[in-house]
Amino acid sequence: NDEPFARTGNPHDELRETYIAIRNNDPNHPVMSMEQGSYGEAAKFVDIFGHDPYPGDTKDPLTYVAERRSAADEATQGIRPVNSLLQVMNWRGYFPTGDDLRSMIYQTFLEGGGSYGFFRFINASDAGDDLDETHLWEPLTEFTHNEREDAFKAFVFEFRKHLTCRNL
Image (tube, rainbow, N blue to C red; front, side):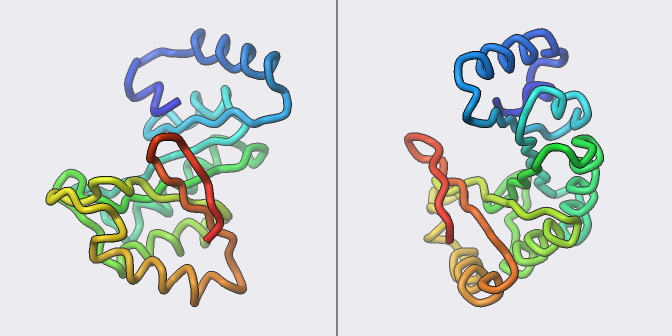
């Protein structure tokens, strides 16, 4: 589910019923949802809580991810994993630089996060370039191959025909 509280306002009953139905039908796979605002409420209805702390053009990319990651951890009370989905596209007038992206990844880990992903791979730029055709691809691959190797476990979420997860 993508940002149910941001999109519908008060989805408590629907989320509760959906969570119960999924758990009754498939107790072996986790339920995950993404949220941008009502962390405390959204975290009640998932096994893995995801948030997308996009700085856009109004937030400081050097602190915003850490602030939102901390809020997500507080909302889950340390009993649910949190995945941070980081901004890698031009959104609201802000397209991260390679250094901004590196900072966002470190902010996630410094706040205790062990899982992060990226949105958006397809049409990441205003020109319609996919992520691997933008200025972020080289810094991203350098980070994942050089810095992450010993200390971090990272996952990249690709939104193509369906959600896939691959280890870098």
